[in-house]
Amino acid sequence: MERTEFYVISFENTHSAMEAQKILRPHYSITVIPTLREVSQSCGISVMLPEMNQQEAIAAANSLGMEKGMFQLYFAKGDKNHRQVEAIQI
Amino acid sequence: MYKVDARGEACPKPVLMTKAAVQNGEEEIQTLVDNPTAVQNLSRFAASVGYTHESQEENGVYTVTLKKDPNADVQKAEAYEDRSWSIFCTENRIGSADNELGHNLINMYFYTLTQMDTPPSVIAFMNEGVMLPCENQQIVDSLKTLMEKGTRVMVCGTCLNFFGITDKLQCGTVSNMYEILEAVTACGKMMRV
Image 1 (cartoon, each protein chain N blue to C red):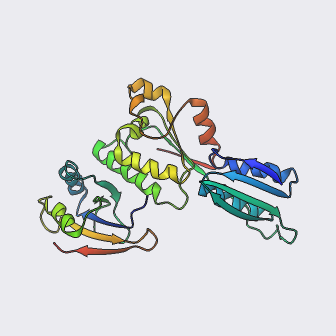
Image 2: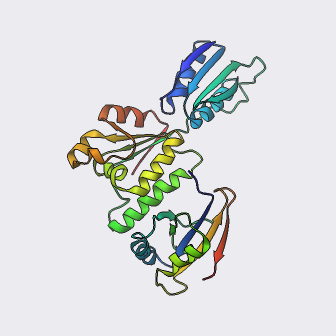
Image 3: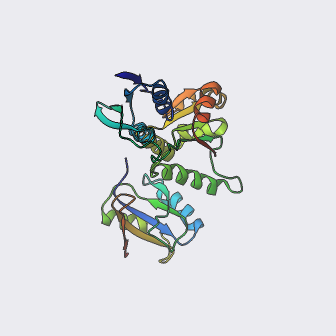
């Protein structure tokens, strides 16, 4: 089933994206997806978070313990043909 | 009304069965299929040979009715193109330079397939590819989504047995070399992964 609302984290480089998976996977049922077309300044690997609210998504992103600028949390809304992506400031 | 029962058949079989009826001169044909991709393919096929088409769904079974249209201009109709495609997957990653990157790529590959307008008709797993529908939860979820859209997932039974993971298969049908080759080569294109 296609999710029409989700939080997703993109990364500055591929190695951060892989490191993030190791940190998040024990705690969250994450999905590795190609970085959304709407997001340009990132590496190609992103991590989609399971269903959760914004507060929980920010907590998940902060649990990475990475420097700001190494990752970016987004909220994506709509189906693949009509998607809006909003950057969430942490 | 000539009837074609193509339930349980993967694309492009429903079109091929219906095409045989058209070639026999049947002017009213009712084809039963069980997935929306087959309905789309039949609609495009009907238009290409100058037939009207209507479809109805009941309990997951689609009835597509094709009628010869005396006013159709077949010369101007868009030729039916077999857009069906299959995937023959024999690895549990994409590429071999780095395993972690390869696993990331294959996860993203199967996720992206679920987002495509024309998903594959058949995905066949062989050799270490059979580990994916057994052990990789993200790919199992993607495969289940694809199966809902009509993709047929086939897994080599010999390979499952070799790796001792037959009881771990989470989705798809245990199959053999004959069935897999028939299904993979019946599609318009094949992609090797």
